[in-house]
Image 1 (cartoon, one colour):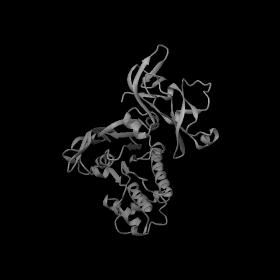
Image 2 (image 1 turned 135 degrees about the horizontal axis):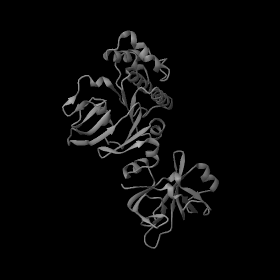
Image 3 (image 1 turned 60 degrees about the vertical axis):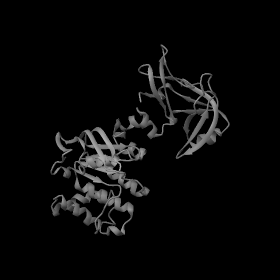
Image 4 (image 1 turned 180 degrees about the horizontal axis):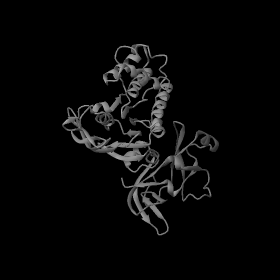
Length: 362
């Protein structure tokens, strides 16, 4: 599917322009993750891609054929896409009946319906609840049943809105496994909206970051998540060390200069830019190590904070003559903190390579 210049305004009061000139290419088959802050328009975009709503501006094309625009959605086009909502609506009856009802509504002959559902019973752990009434199953089971319904339809495009949000680990694992299996079959293009960065990294080949009503950055999942090229994405990813400055060419090397900062970097050209230094790329040492790393800053540990599986060590370097030095953060393991006895008030070094600093225009 190809989206070109999509616009969408949600009714107020006051009216809100959620998508504005958004363009997106979804080559398939494969998994695409849409990331964005709350209210950025992820669900609105999924509804447009599923052809449930028509855009106010722009158009959607399937294999070069225009299927949606400001005048509406082409007749019959909705059969090519399926959207599984984060809060799925199941009709009264059993899980099996819900799936077969959707297939019947799409014109699938009765004799073919069991075969459409069968491949997803085991991957989604539905064997024991197929004939259970939907008002007797858990929220996680209902989510898996809704996904089975979407998978059984076998559409060209499958859209998943926060597919594992608020699910127990078992249900979340089954959902992710089913998506991975679908991807391995290389039959469908999957688009999932998620806040789970680890999930996006595990499942998606491409990531699209939504901000300001447009795709602010898109591309290879690993490359984007490791090296953001916009301040919005860097902030969304939680890059701890983010600064605005200028790159200066010193002949045989380049330096990133900002208030209180003078770092060795690898840059394509001099000039104003942003610098992002992921905390995971920063080493902590008691003494300045003899290594190839070109950047080393000594200071006083200000905070040691647990953050999920890692620990953030915040260092306060001494102020420079021209400006106060900004705080810098390193991410280490609990074992490192214990082995080194890291604690507030102690002196330490932060060390990182020039290549660890990601530079971008904004």
